[in-house]
Amino acid sequence: MENNNKVKIVGSYLSPYVRKVLVCMELKGIEYEIDPIVPFYGSAEFGLLSPLRRIPVLIDGDVVLSDSTVIAEYLNEKYPTPNLLPADIASRGRARWLEEYADSRLGEVLIWHLYHQLVIRKFVWGQEPDHVVLNRALEQEIPDALDYLESQVPKAGFLFDTISIADIAIASFFRNAIFSRYKIDEQRWPKVYRYVADLLAMDCFVKLQKFEAICLKTPILEHRNMLKEAGAPVSEETLGGDKPQPGIVAV
Ligand SMILES: N[C@@H](CCC(=O)N[C@@H](CS)C(=O)NCC(=O)O)C(=O)O
Image (tube, rainbow, N blue to C red; front, side):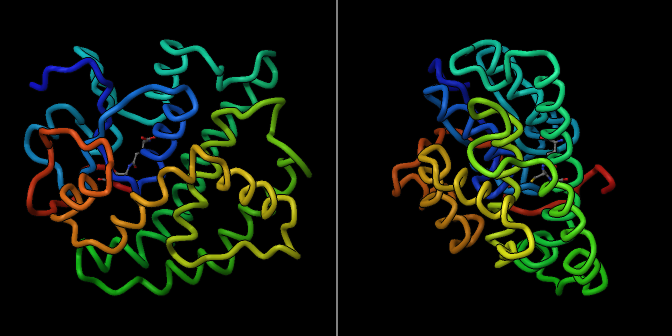
């Protein structure tokens, strides 16, 4: 075990769920280390800490947690400033719903039906995209999600008075849409276009971009070394393996 007091996050810079947690830590000024393992590349030890074999995992001393929402709530309680949940109860409920909508529906369409088809299938499994899944996402599912978000997001600023976990979650998924070369149509969804662009231009997201770019262009097994060279806070030890294995949760 490593002997330092920093919070450790296990998971790749390319995962929207990991990004959600890293942005929370950037905003709160929490020092952390990252073990940037790609999903499906976890070792046997990783499987013991993350029973669903998913990233992110947080390790904070003896505390080991899975799931980005659980981790973000833990961090928000342990490091309460700035508070990433709105103060009043109704807004807090709505923030939690929109975070959940991002994690579940945007996760399904922007990650599994878009990014997974175009990026993961090729680079992890050496497979072509499933064009039926991809076309349904492009023609129906993503437009439906954008219609819903257009009815929710404001013309200016954040969803609530200050940035919340809902803003962070929604923007985190659209970053992967950019990796998949998807562009939000500004004419059709002007509010979402502005909202996502403004969030992704914040320092807490921009700081991560150079590490994301390295992961996008580097073979998976070289991520750690290349990231270290670029100054990422990479941990000494890793829970990564050298071969991918299929996930255990059906999507
Ligand atoms: N509900 C989880 C979802 C995490 C998740 O699906 N992570 C993906 C990476 S983006 C993963 O680990 N996939 C591997 C798998 O499904 O086996 C969270 O919020 O953390």
